[in-house]
Image (cartoon, rainbow, N blue to C red; front, side):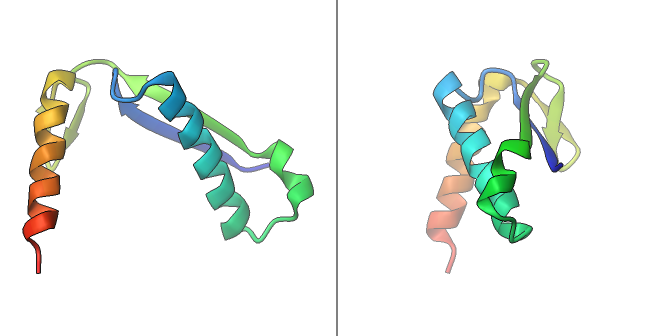
Length: 82
């Protein structure tokens, strides 16, 4: 019985996006395991939110209010990548 735990920054995802995350992670597990469709009801995905300031990247802690700027910076780097 596969179980996936996805942890996101507090407030980063709407309820609709959390539901989409569950759907897509479930599909990824099914594909990775080459599982029959009958196994889908037994795949569990938990989406948790970390406390504000309780997450970081590359050794630097962030608050949720910094998330939009971080996403914009990553998008800009990807746009300018060769």
